[in-house]
Length: 139
Image 1 (cartoon, rainbow, N blue to C red):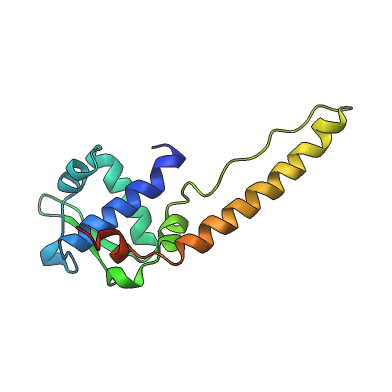
Image 2 (spheres, rainbow, N blue to C red):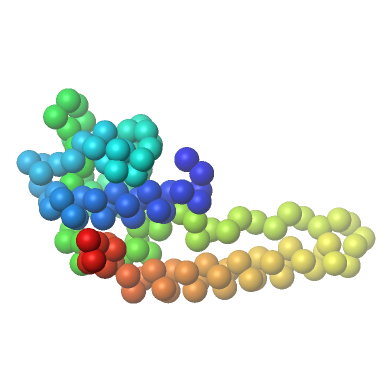
């Protein structure tokens, strides 16, 4: 999965779990059901839920009757935590090194890096004010 898709897929996954009320093993949602909602491959979902589990946002159980469920109420999961958990799209990349001897080529990588850091900080700040519950409020 590309870096630009990690965050939206993770947010969708958590929103789906919240919408279905999946807060315990008995309410777990399978990767195939989650994948059908997005739509993507169940393997993509399993990789994503592994990252979300490492961040303490979900738990999973493998096997035929396995699935994923939320460990926290949706109201307490801000989207900046989701972004951080999956190393998502707020990371805008890195500027290539400039050509030796070119004044623009030597200055631009540092200037672009500064701009990308500012954009990342602004995105993180905004996402910290939106929760998974906010995503499903109007469903």
